[in-house]
Length: 150
Image (cartoon, rainbow, N blue to C red; front, side):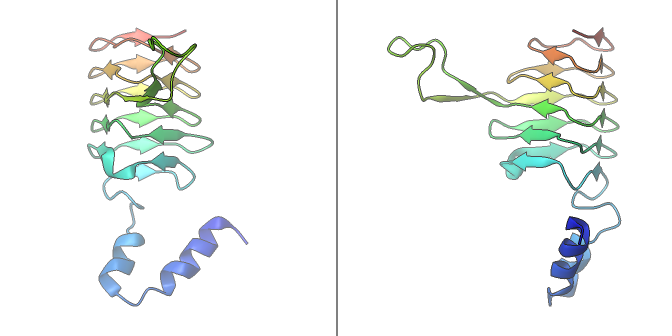
């Protein structure tokens, strides 16, 4: 039995019609957006999607502890990692890092395209219209309409 059919059976047990309709909205869990059911999202309350956002599955992980915003009409291919938390690697008492978690907001603008298997590091801002090539590790902010890779 697939995870989707199990989920649907559980939803059918919900007695409140409006909640059931929200959970089975034709656009999925995020109305107005298309988020694959297998995407792993932590701290979902800190995730903001702009509308008409596509996020593919296949191992995609959204770490939203520090806040993650994705602008409208943006496409995220499968297997991408968006990280908003980091270790305190500048610790004066521990090597290579201490147990302090540092949170940094990550922002992806409108009309962006994030290629498959890309990793976006905490604190990065990808401005409107930018394209991130597949397999990229983005450690610095990306200017408007830029194409980056590597």
